[in-house]
Image 1 (cartoon, rainbow, N blue to C red):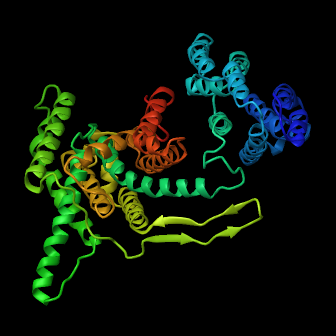
Image 2 (cartoon, helix red, strand yellow):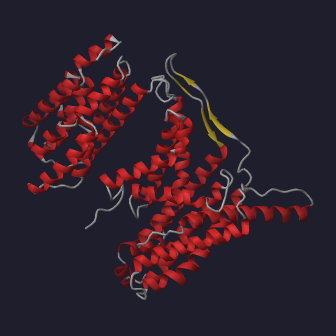
Image 3 (spheres, rainbow, N blue to C red):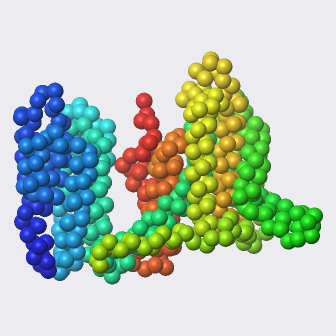
Length: 515
């Protein structure tokens, strides 16, 4: 392993993997010098030793050993950032790009992740230890530190805390990024180590589109949390919301033009509440006519019935729209005339620059609409009597009925609100994307990923899940070695997140653990 920069070689001697192993062994021994009422969990001390040794070598280990009260989440995250920054600069200077990949596959990687996932949870079960999140920690640990995870978890069987997830997840992300940088030095995401504009631009694009994704996913998770079913018509409701907005704007503009004698274009912002209101009524009517018998106990196999009836509802909506509107793409006018918002360029040094960031005006406007609607829904659920009734119904229908809440009305309201949010999401996006009757199929797939990632039934989870999926798609497409393939694989990156969440944490980021 030949490194071009002598400073990097010095870092490997004064910090890095060797000192990480030393810190992992030494720091838990400081437990005896800590006051009994201030004792720190052994697992947390091991994590602190690992991070401190890897980032700052004997300085970091000695600091935590002498002042264990400094072991806080903020200092651990700071240590991770230092370790990632310095070690990334070391590894991108390796002359043989294949050597780090081979070493990583031997000392960590997928094989060790599979072994840890199989053996460690069984060991926790055998010794009757708390195995909550043990599978997730074992898989991430095997992927990032290989056999060291067996020493950490097999011997002590610690309760897995959120700190474990932060450290192991960050370390795994850094390893993937660094290996990618070594193998693809000319990629725009890594070719200039101190130039962050491209990555920041891709991340900003992901946040913008992720907020729009979240709006549709919030409607889906609201329906599930109250009714306990997944609506397979959600994508078609999203699609028809865009068409309702488009035709309302078209006809309203024509009517106003005839009345005034001047050509008038109605801003697409007015189509959002119109589409939401129409689809709200559609959703309420469908729920009363087809889903209410299921909740009244008139249907024997309710779950299968819900899948078939919502799928059929979506099928009718899609092909009715196709018959009326045709297969030709449609697009509404722009929300605002500003085509791009450009943030000013900031030059810090000759080697480090940030900017400018360009955000498409219509996407930024749609993002604001999505955020306002989501926080409006959160306010409705938290601060109003009806919203609290929905939350109570989602937790226990019988208990809610005892307190005077009508679960039947709450079911109808939940489905209507969820349908309305999907339609408003479509109305917010029709000025941005070309609209066809089958556009909902692609979006609803993302919604399922977002709902699972955030946690079934969690509105904040849907918001954060949408942003995560948006960022993953943007970075995946933008950083792919072949840009044309990267755009084609955009949905695959979201599905990869979906598979990992189902494997490692089926309840999602904010989902409730089963009782």
